[in-house]
Length: 376
Image (tube, rainbow, N blue to C red):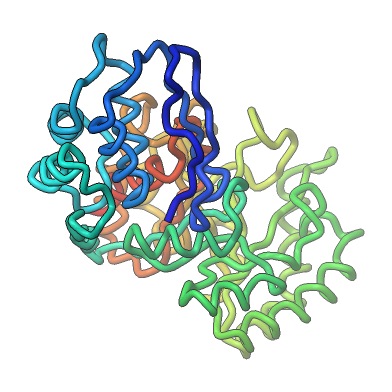
């Protein structure tokens, strides 16, 4: 149940109230301007929607605020919502919305006549989906767990040991573990970091294995004036000190490819060819690459062809829109459905994780749309 003291004020000034839903606290802010006073029936309709599903309310207000006139009845509001919403609630049909509107116009509100929502359509299951924890700071980890389960998948990337109990309590898998690294700039390419890294990764490999997880992220670190081949030799030497232990425990060390032009200046593992050569030198199924589509589009492009050539070394994928690292829809240059079909067709059985920074007003809606685009 959502507690909202005021839906609309009786004057024409802006209304802004915080959605206090326990599942989505702090996520949605409703701002409606230039609305004339609503009749009781129309207000009852919106209140019904509030109580039933906040995704629907967001879509309703989004549409209504853009409309030049204001509805006189709950029926009219419901009909508009059912036809024009671009962010409907999961499973909502036009018939559902009209029934809600009819209930509101009769003053029945949330007295039990609202329709039960159908379950979200199941995902195809050809790719395993995940999302990076850090991209949804407005949600607690528990809220993010509930969100991904509602969308239809059950994995979150880049979560450390202190938060694994929360994942387990929600039945959500840690698809890419972290916490062993010293950071993005101090990695295995720097011999001066090897002793610290070996100690940290040896311990973390055990934590990952004991928790029943598999993937553990690592980084090359920065060049710091090194020739790339020197950095590769250093990384090979450092990783060999822990790779045997990872093999014994069934843990896969995954080095992320990052761009060094926009986001991570001086990062060494910034081209797929460098990472693939390191994989070939190490020659272990327990080491591979995190192919970040966003980062590699910036550095080298040729995404689908690269996946076709080197997919054997790609243990994990990340997404984001280019440019900007935001939503992955048609406002950016990458064709994610085509890319995901290419990944699917390689027989990939790992995880594809969304790592975009939501820019739209409805971050959860953006995640839902991204999963839909990638569910090929």
